[in-house]
Image (tube, rainbow, N blue to C red):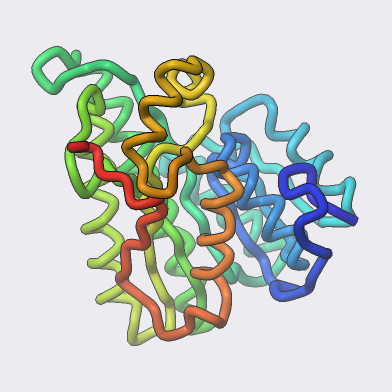
Amino acid sequence: MTSPISGSRRMTRTRFEKKVAIVTGGVGDIGKAIALEFAREGAHVIIADNNEKRDALGADISKFGGTYQVIKTDVSNQVDVINMVQRVRNTHGGIDILVNCAGVWIPGETLLECPEENWDRVMDINLKGCWLCCKAVGKVMAERRKGVIINMSSQVGITPGRGAGAYSISKAGIIMLTRQLALELGPLNIRVNALAPGVVKTGFNENIWKDPEIAEHLSTTIPLGRMAEPDDIAGAALFLASDESRYVTGDILTINGGWQPGR
């Protein structure tokens, strides 16, 4: 049976059989692609999201025999995060994988134009939310001395991008959060890495890739000649969550087709 995202590209496999994976922001395009890929590999996927469409994603997972649990979660709220993690622990006994995909972008704002409330919202969800989830899940993983955490940064967390504003600062913070956690959790056999996608065709930026003229121009600035699909990011997450990357931690994996915002 095949994934609604990946089509017939791959057969169902069991790389993550009996493993428990939490995907925050699982309803977003990238989070959804990752959740589906993990479920295809045999993981029991917990969709932790504040979006009302989270139940529909669970239905997609079940179409190809995947198992899942949906938990309404505001990642910027510590009580919500702790309750979500406790529910997962009580049900499954442990957590093997955490992917922090929850995020928000308010496009077009410079740092001088950004209102305080927009800055707070971006930082609360993107950076604070990532830290809260890492903190709560990391404590559970530490009890069994094993686990994998993947945080979602961005190319504009490495190099600045026009109109990214507070978003780029939050994603840069995630990079240092990832490296600091990798240092602290490495002795406990917990690996922490981050993904830094370039331009991905998601609902965040559909005003760009749905405009043929803009999309064509942007694609010419990307050495591979196209913008990424969410499935491209899911494949990288699959690698970092698997034993194939067992000696990789504290790394920031860029998936950008060679693109740099300055170009």
